[in-house]
Image (cartoon, rainbow, N blue to C red; front, top):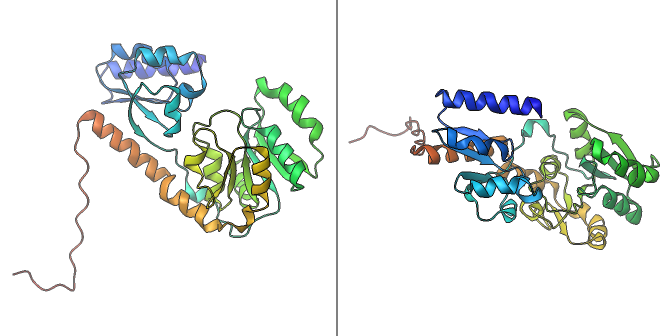
Length: 292
């Protein structure tokens, strides 16, 4: 936290000195307390804080007139009264994800080891269906007891395996080789980056219908959006029939880094009163004759 506030203070100092045309805040609500000290626009991307956290809402409501960007339409449900100027989905670098056309023979859980992310439900799903589960997860300090008491006793290295944290290469292989990613969250999901990463590899998602999951997963096409563990178990037996090419195409259409960048550039231009960029002129057709 100390370094976050030092970073925040330096950014505000530079902004007051005229170094920026606009300040884009990704550090929750707290920099907004200082927004009145600046004479440039301050736009905030919420990243789930307004949806899942209580304390920042006091600040967000105090500065509800400032511009906000949601990372999904569902995220706005936390504070619908804010001044939303756009929804900009998170984007991935497709070069980091290798498309795999054939389904694997295991389920995968990728993300934070937490009851909120449904790690225990992923284990239960694997045991109910008989399909092995590989879990790749960060264990935050405040989730260590949950892991030791709820998850570890069910690890056997065969039906349920914990592989720890993975880097980009290991993540690519793990996701691409899976039958499906399991994301049975128990609280509304602001976005769900792991869902996009899996689909970029061609791997469908079985996700709980909370928050942005129905926005990120095309039900019946790139996965199954379910409402219970029973529905998830049914989806496990159907997911291999999905065309994995649709998963990759869905990401290419909506969730790339380029799409994210373009979305934010539109926001910046809107807030600064700048016109939309002109489309580049088409090159002359060498086969066309001289104009009259």
